[in-house]
Every structure is written in C-alpha cells, then in structure tokens.
Length: 120
Image (cartoon, rainbow, N blue to C red; front, side, top):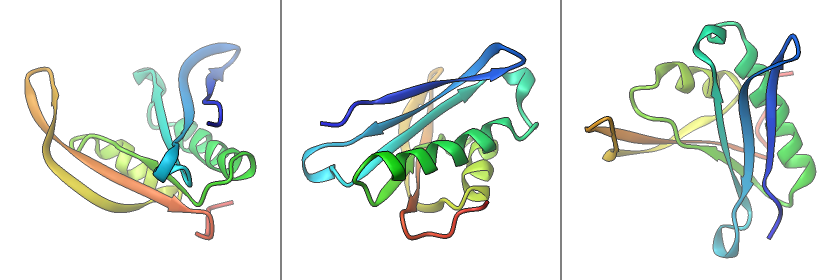
C-alpha cells in the first residue's frame, strides 16, 4: 500500500501539533483517513483549519483516492466545525462506539470527495 504521511504543525519553529494522511488498502483503497491534533494553547487561531486544507490537497495530489475521511468524537465540536469549514460533510454517527476516560462517546464520520468544492 501507499505510505502514511505525517507532518508536524509548527508555529515559530516549535512543533505544536501533527497531521497525518493514512491511505487505506484492499476494498478501502480509494480512501485515506485524516488524523490531527493541536496543542490547546493554539486552538481557535485557524492553524488546524489551514493544516487540514493543505493535507487534503496533498492527499488528492499524492494518492489515487476519491475520499478523505476523519472520525472526530461526537463531543469535539471544534473539530466538527473545522472539518465543515474545510468542505467535509457528516456521513455518519456511531452512537456510544468509543470509550474515553471511562465515558462512552459517539464517533462521527466526516468526509470530503475529490470532486467537492474546497475552500481556497
């Protein structure tokens, strides 16, 4: 399969987060999963939004895929907003599918298609 690409998110030369594209294989080979995190002091500054836009463009240029997807927690409204801002659409919700800190959480699936209009 295709290699995973993981990038540091830097602010003033310091790594403050990371973002990765994980190509899928076999029957899922036309898809890649997007994963990311950003240190909390840097939230709300447009940093992760810009990184997502760049990562999605990179994914469609680099891999023979039709869809990039991300799976935020149902409680992570900031992540949902930043995906929507970047043209991702909510495709599904798996209720109480994840456990974090002893709490059952919903798992959402957001995706963007190659042919979708993406913010410039």
